[in-house]
Image 1 (cartoon, helix red, strand yellow):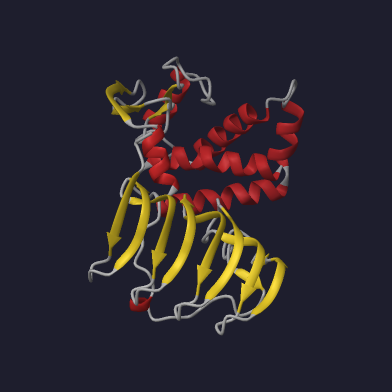
Image 2 (cartoon, helix red, strand yellow):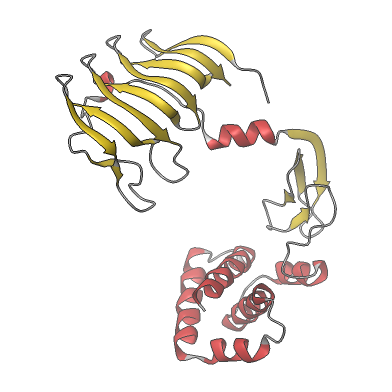
Length: 274
């Protein structure tokens, strides 16, 4: 991984927005984020999505807002405090203990309790800061090597990343594993996958055949046929298949290959349901 560097970062208006250790020009390590008015916003250790571990957060008026342990949020939403002490905008301690966070993947990461945690400010009064993100971590750990591999299914030249499997972005065939050996992740043999890709999903029967074959490969049961027959003969599944195919026809009206990829993805959802 690249080396951390101590830097001062400024917003487009020349306000100091961060001072501390950085990685790829973004907060990473010990440092402090500032409001445009010069007051502190957060201080502590920064990593993916912002403040992590024990740190401090401040109101825009300069008063201490929270001393807490911040959790690295791997879902939608910012990092959030899990346990600590909360102060109101006058600097008076009003809460100490475990914080309650909004549930679910959408809206996750916002403090529900104690009440009044969020400070609503105009955008130009918020720190204009770009935190280190998961994509940045991925780029550091798996940079392009300069090597390319030609996809045996569609002929696309695919760039190779360090310590990462090689997947074709065009036809979705996983070409090789992390050690550059032929991948075992694919549901079909290379011969079958190329045949299905070249033909694509044109008719409803094509769609059902692909979904059924992919579903069978996903179940990996010792004798899957009775289960497969039961699932695909049920009225509910037949209705779902018909509805999904109509959606795909509209969404990918000019691309039977895209309908093929969508059929594979739908098989995964069906396997999770049944």
